[in-house]
Length: 312
Image (cartoon, rainbow, N blue to C red; front, side, top):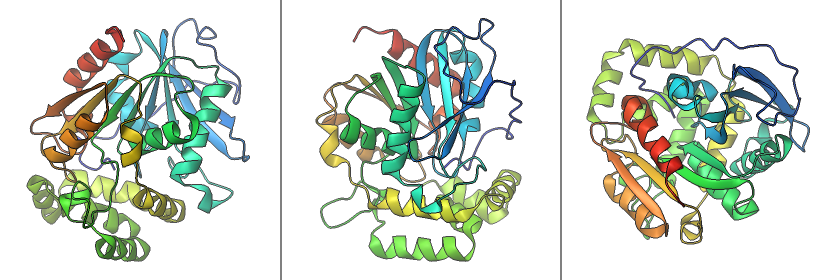
């Protein structure tokens, strides 16, 4: 989820490129942005923006967002990296032939299809929120194929809390609250997403929601323009997942970035993830919400590049 952004949404103007063509990082000498797509192995079309030159960097956005989430960071990343930003299936305004196919398992397979289609090896894969869940599912299903390092942003390995798990959403979001959320989403999808974000741990978010601040109204309009069916199906998949068993088996260097005032997770969640991934480095961005990479952009770009360049 990417609701509270510090600046207005940016228009995503794209260069023309032959859709579906393979890209080895050398077909674009100027490093300009290319709007491309490929066909997943179930026949759905996945849209990808590619920009920059250098070692591969894959950016996976959050639930209800799109590849545009990463636009403010591109200038700092594309000078040294070939950046792949997709619109995950069911996201970005692209229709799906089968709305029920927008699941985390299918998105993990889409990521493998992307890596194979573009011949990517040794990529640094960065996932925010849903993107982090997609990476954990990928590791479970496909291992480290095509990957070299990971960066995971503000996510719990299990969204729903229970008697044995207090590190999910709000620290108190079990089956009953998830059923309530689903009723909100089915009644008014946009308002349901906004309430999920506003009613959490970040008090500033709640205040801005009650004031109907301009940024929240823009987000409401953007959410209302989306088809809710695949996004609700996607939420059902995300909220059913549990990746606690995946963490200890991650062999890749991993940068963890969490908001010190996340809407959804306390710092105890961040420390749980850091303690359970063998080769993890934790950075907590004080004063930032669920999108710390948006609120402290220069720091995030700097620390991500330092992490990529570090031996490992």
